[in-house]
Amino acid sequence: MLKVNNAYIASSFIKRYIKMSATDLRYKIALSMVGGIGAVNARNLIAYVGSVEGIFKERKTALMKIPGIGEVNASKIINQQVLSRADEEVEFIARNNVKTYFYLDKDYPTRLSNCPDAPIIFYLKGDCELNTEKIISIVGTRNATEYGKNFCNEFIEELSRKHPGTLIISGLAYGIDVCAHKAAIKHGLPTIGVVAHGLETLYPSLHQQTANEMMKNGALLSDFPSNTDLDRKNFLRRNRIVAGLADATIVAESANKGGALITADIAFSYNRDVFALPGRKGDRYSEGCNTLIKHNKAGMLESVDDLEYFMNWKSGAKKDIPVQTKLFVELNEEEKVVVKLLQSEGEMAIDRISLKSGFPMSRVSSLLLNLEFNGMVRAFPGKVFRLR
Image (cartoon, rainbow, N blue to C red):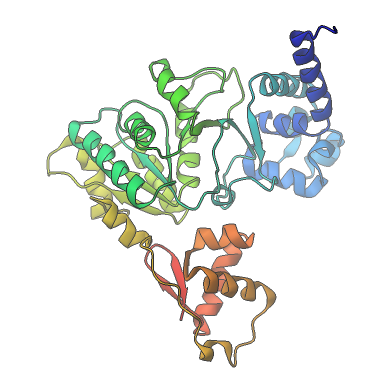
């Protein structure tokens, strides 16, 4: 009987994976590793050159002429060391069953793709639907009080009953973050921890068991390659993903300064809904939440009922489009797609319309505005739209 050498097969698979990826994945990863480029310039490079691989085969003088690149960045791109580092990352991905999402991939999260500074590539360990219907982020202080912890547990328990399948996003940090993840695990909701380092490690290591449980019905996500040094600025940078993946960001507790408030500001800049749990005057870890509410940067949220009201998540009967709205209005093909979706769903949030139609958020916003002017649709709180 022929003996099968499992180690040999695994090794052969990894080598074939690396070889197949050499003309695709390695270049995508390498582009993200070029220091000083950033997401916006990376997109410009691809647009000007025509392909990711072509960027690394282009002449330095040609790269220098691309807006935002210049001589310094062009020199970094043609340096072959970044490709060698990318090859190491491809091998790490193969060995550790890590998934990659490039911003031009069909399965790249629609909500995140609408953010101007979204990562061009990120890494996911686990199994989770990133384009699911309802996604919220829950963030807060690392020094969570019983008030904040109880809110997380009670809120997520109620959410799991009323809206099963809602994806919970947080940063797997101490305090409110890990409390939200644990509550999601306990009540059967999928959850993703966005970390500020490569997926070969976990910080804080104390949360390793929680992370293991999360990956059974969720994932760990990072836009940092393996062996990235822990750096404070990386924790701030990952906040844009926490905000960008979700329909809404909830700040459960926060002092007047902290990462949770930065995440809320980012979500606000993305035109996403922001909510905050109010607290008593003088409570240190409610000061940030109260300030957000006072300055109209966040809606006051105390229960799932509040979230349903603001996001218009309560289910309603589907309405047939009145005959009058079909008359005297000529729709272009894109508008017809949006109207058809609203006919079938009854009401939809703008993110959901973008997801279902495949149109960019900016285009959907323009189409809805035109339909609203023509008396075809009505806008409701939570960026939800219905046909008249």
